[in-house]
Length: 189
Image: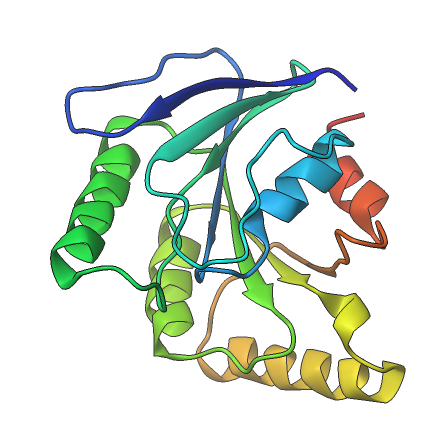
């Protein structure tokens, strides 16, 4: 698979043009966005994965095998940054949504944690405006029984809040579990 970094968008004056479908990745800081991009691309360092939450501060764009453009958006929720910086990220994300034709949203969620208010707000908004896929990450960190309970809790959360989801998948970027299934869903083959 031929995947490459295209560019970063860091302010309101930049706009990206492409004929390829645009797929955005959103999720809480430290939920595994960069690791998932690297797993999908079968490349260890295409997207920079950091141990510290909040390292993605720009919208980073990747060409995924000439099939789609993947937009890695700044994470929401916990990050050791100022409120002003968080507000800047929020405005950048909103600007990106306003100026670009988005074909699909990948809503990433660390399966070890129950979705919070941040997820609820973003997921409801995204599901009403875009085709959405919920990608539960880090499934390798749970035992089979814990995973089954976590998936059932997530299903109930989605049902209770009437979040429209086109597809759901649990993945492990580390062990590559269900990465091929997600590639097929995104038509990266």
